[in-house]
Length: 332
Image 1: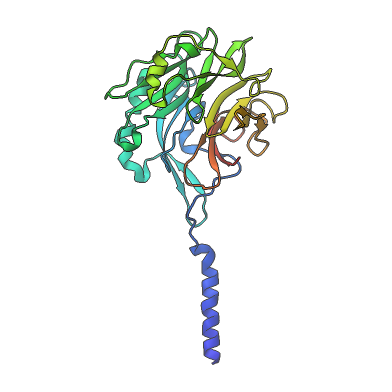
Image 2: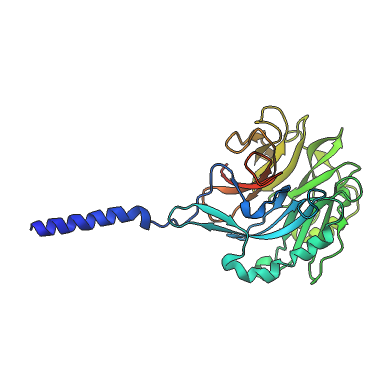
């Protein structure tokens, strides 16, 4: 009898000691404080990302001045895959296709679009739109961005709908002014386009205008040269610089140097409820730093079921140099 007691005790000990090591996480856990995206950063400035999600694979485009050794900004494409450790749940962001290698041929055509968009001046704030028929096997893209090749930043676009080649970039004329206009983004049902502009006393505010066409007719919408009513959003905007709006679902994130932050430009969010945007909320010291935080975007990567990924740039201490790209988990 004593031998059986010893045997069962030994089995119980082995099982209990194995549990922490053998447990598998079925989802990743995004960090609550920002982590550096080391594989994407350089000693120069890397920011202004766009990251439409296909689950754990993300066709990641961002602006960098590495190609000119710190002079003008170009938009580049780097594939991103989201990995997590099934023993700990920790998430890693890597520059590879991993098990999504089948996407490589379809998405490397983005380099053709960016080669057409980039100039000897600066291109900032890309927003990559996948064609609405993408999930049925149609790999068409539309990319919006801003270029200052004419002196001021103007919002432009290029696309390859129904064509193997990308079209020559054009301005979206009704969004642009004689001042800097950048960072176009859509609300959840594509009824409005938002952007930031310095058209009011050289201070950046957040503006919007209704879209007249269906979401699958964006090219026709952007080719329209008629004038539109452009509205300043006085809830989101302040007397200071409010820039880089990005919308996912009912949440807008943006950056501002308004008072009350951690220092420099801070990241804020606003929730759309009852047909209006709520008062902006500072993300606080766990995300913002005494330095500058810039161009946030939200990503639903499908890896962490409770938090969305937010990617942004910062020139905080400890980076690779200049502005670096960071990621963090957020919930609203």
